[in-house]
Each structure stands twice: as C-alpha cells, then as structure tokens.
Amino acid sequence: MSSSSVAQKRLFHEYRNLSINPPEGIFAGPATEDDMFNWEALIQGPEGTPFEGGVFAAELKFPKDYPLNPPTMKFVGGGVWHPNGDDPNHYEHASERWSPIQSVEKILISVMSMLAEPNDESPANIEAAKMWRDRRNDYERRVRDEVRRGLGL
Amino acid sequence: MSDCSFDIPNSTDWLETPLSLVSPLESSLRCQVCKDFFNNPVITSCSHTFCSLCIRRCLSTEGKCPVCRSSDQELKLRRNWAVQEIVDSFRNARPGMLSLAKHPVDGGKVRGDDNPDGPTPKKRRLNRGETSEESSPVESKMTRLQSRSLRRRAQVAPTEVIEDSEDEDFVPDDGLVACPICKKRMKNDVVFEHLDTCTGPERPSQTTPFSGSLQLRSESPRERPHDSAVTSPQRLPTINYSILKDSVLRKKLRDLGIPDWGPRTLLQRRHMEWMNLWNANSDAKVPKSKQDLLLELGIWERSQGGQAPAASLGGSNSVMHKEFDAAAWSTDHGDEFKRLIANARKRSDAIVRSTIPQSPKGQNELSISNDINAKVTEPNAGEYIETLRSATMGAEQLAYRAEERSGEESGRTEGSSQTQILNATVG
Image 1 (spheres, rainbow over the protein chains, first blue to last red):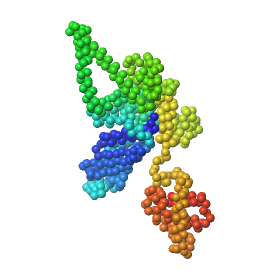
Image 2: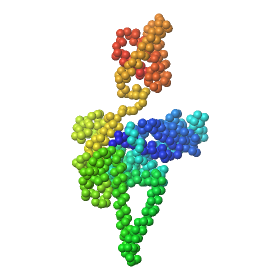
Image 3: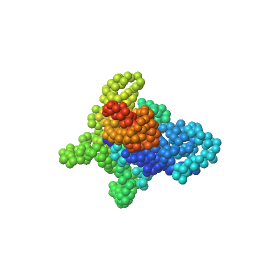
Image 4: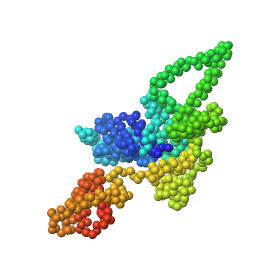
C-alpha cells in the first residue's frame, strides 16, 4: 500500500490535469515535486480588462486534509489593486464557497473572473471599490499602471 | 513522500490518443472528491455518487453533499452496485484499451488483422448456415440464431482475456503473481514449483462460465481478505463527543482497538476517521480485514493525525513557532554560539578599552543596546545562521553583559541568553 495520503493523491491528479490540459491563462503546479502541499500559480490578466497583459503570481498552500478544507492563496509581490482586495481568499461569492469537489483549477478560474468582474457586494479594499464604482477610468488607469510596473516596464 | 504517487493513472491519459473522448468517460467514473475511481460507491439522498469513504469524511466535517450542498446523513447513504460494476469492468479493460489507443502502429496492425479475420467468421457463419440448412427461407433464421450464439461466444472470449489482464494488472500491487490455473497469488519464484502440484481451481463452482462474471471478478484473489471473519461487519454508530468524558472516550478507542493517546481533539478526530474507515469498509463487497484498516488509520495518523509533522513551516519560521524547542536548538548550535561569544568578547574588550574607557557602566550598556536594536531591526531575517552572524553585535552585547555580571558564566546563563539573542535577532 502506498504511503501517500488522500490529499497527495488528489493533488497529484489535479497537477496532472492542469499540466496536460490547462485552462487558458493559468499555470499551476507544486513548487517542488517533493512537496505537493505548496503550489505556485501564474494567472494571466483576463483579456479585455485593465488587467490584460499582466501576469499575477500566487502561492497556494494546501491543508493536510485537502480537499475537505480549501487551500489558502496569496498573490506574490504586491498583490493587485482590486475592489475585493488583494487577498484572493475573499474572492468567492457566498454561493461559491469551498466544497471538496472544487479544485485548484476552479479556484484560479474564479480568481481570474473576479479580476474581470469585481464583486461589489463584499469589497475588501473600500478605496478601490469606490474608485471602481465612481471613477472607472481612474481605476482602470491605475490598474494598467500597476500591471505595467509589475512587468518591470 | 512516495514516488509511486507520480504514476497514478489519470483521465488525461486518453487526451493524446485517438480515443480522447474516453477521457470524459473516465472522469465520470471517478469520485469528484478524491479523483480516483469510485471505490465502494454510495449514492446520497440527493442522488450524487461518491466513494463511501470520501462522502463519509465530507459528511462528518460538514454534513452536506459536496455537489449540491443539501444536508445529508451518512445513515441515508445507499450502496451503488451498478456503478461499482461499471468501474470494475472499465478498470479491467483500461490497460488494454489504453495501450491499443497509445500505439497507433499496433492499433493499425490489429485493425489489419481484424479485417482478414472479420470476413472469415462471416463466411464460416454463412457456410455453416448453408451446410446445416439447405433451404434458403430458413437460412436467414438460422444465421440469426447462429450469429447470436456466435456473439455470445464472442462475449466469452473477451471476458476471459479481461480476467487475464486483470491479473496482470495487479502484479505491481502486491508483488505477487497469480497461478494461471488456480489463480492463487504467490511469489514469482514459487509459481513454477507450485504449477507442478497445482490441483486446479480452488472453487470449481466459481469458474462456471459467465454466471455473474462480475461477482467472480470482485472475489478475485486480490481482494480476498486475510480472514473471512469480517464478512458482515457491524457498523459503528456516531458518537456525540460532547457528552463523553475524556476517560470514557479513551476507553472507547481502546475497546475499538485503536490508539488512545493524544489530546481530546485528536481522540475525536481519530475516532471519526476510524468510524468512517470502518463504515466505508462495510459498504465493500469484500470488506478488508481489521488489520488493513488499522494500516490505513496509521497512514492517516502519519499524514493528518498525531504523528503528522507539526506545521511544516520552513527554516526561519520554525524559530518563531510557539513550540520551538529553544533548548534543543542551543545544544545543537552550541559550538556556533560559543564561537560567536568568543568573537564578541574579543571585540567588545577592544571597544570597551579603546572607545569608552571611562564612562559609567550603565550608560555604556545602554548605548550599545541601542546600537543593537538598530542593527537588529534591519530586515535581514532570512537564513537563520546568516542573521545570527550579521548580528554579532548582539553577541558582543551579551558577552559584555556577561563580563559585567562576572561569575554568572555558567552554561545555563549562556543557554538562556542565547535564546534571548535568537529571539532578538529573528524578531
């Protein structure tokens, strides 16, 4: 009997799926293959949004009882200027709360779509939310600037 | 971590083959929680299917169906034999299908072989039809009958092949080989010896052709438990932990034959895991032995339970951890500390003599410690030892103080002061 836990096995399945058949604009996998519980992910800014062209790196940490409990996710390097804050763990709608059938892929896709369409019901970054609601142009300019800065331009 | 986890079969195996459409088929035969093939599938009262163990674990954490979030109870779970049979047959057919799909050259050959083969049975069928019944109106009837029987025969052949391939499949699982005659599993090098004395199938009644071949298969030697005493295990009831005292709970675990050490939360979690393992096992067609379940509990213990590595925080963070063993750290790195202290002493002697020879001692200490604070707050915390070296000043201060205190130079003081530095530098 293999000594790997349910979590490891499941993470490996997800890793295989993501590396062989990745959704567009998303790359993810364990930082080292020795440790399936720490992942790195890259999310491309969705097209047609001010985040377009940006690449956002994130870290995912999985609990030992994954998938019973969700991983935590953190943007690496500065985060993003976004009404829902720069903590992607707060990006979910109430109806999209964690369930064991969710997956890394679904998390990353929902983060991506949250970048495109902020959820103004639960703003975490009030300032950004106000800017997004009242001065959309300023908001988009700021995001674009930050994207450019993030790329080192 | 186990390397073997890196060649788990996965539904993506099909994607690069001409049979890419099998991929969604395979995904739908896999549990959405563990992503593995359904193992003892059960259906919830909201009609979703999961592995028995997976859904039990989910229900005991959240009490809701992972798919639709309607609340459910594990008592309402019902076994789903049909799904189990589909999964079993798919798994049996998988290696053959996959290798056929992966090697189009071979596939072509097979197809090529099929073509000449294809017509022959037809011909034979026709011939037989013609020879046995010469009147043409009856012929069509007969051929249909015959073709049916042929079809049945054709079914027999693949099932036999499948059973063979199944045995091949399981070779890597336990490192044993099945005797081709009696299907008993044994070590590779014993097989030939055994073949000389093999008396044939163990239970001849079971080998009657295709009377419920699936049942046959599931009773294949692989799954035959070590003892047949566990054929109908009693299900374990859920416990309301809050009404139990520690000692009672501990006794319960002992009575169940599982470890009873650890704090209360661990006891509860262990009991819950055992209950899930046990009850899921009672959903199995051929339940495993208690021994096997205990092994699985052991895996749980090592990965999530009491023997799980405490929060796997890396290097510098572990120093900040609440339960960080400062004493062990200072013994481990004692030499390093001593060297630092010696260095610091030399330098602080020099400083004291040259720069501030006459100032009162209290002030002296103050100024240096300010200095140190400035040094220490530099965002330099990375590799621990590096930090420590860069903060030799800290050790200087320590040495200076130690000299002032003169006489308190016992190892114990050193040890505790070391931890002081350690906290200071890292903090």
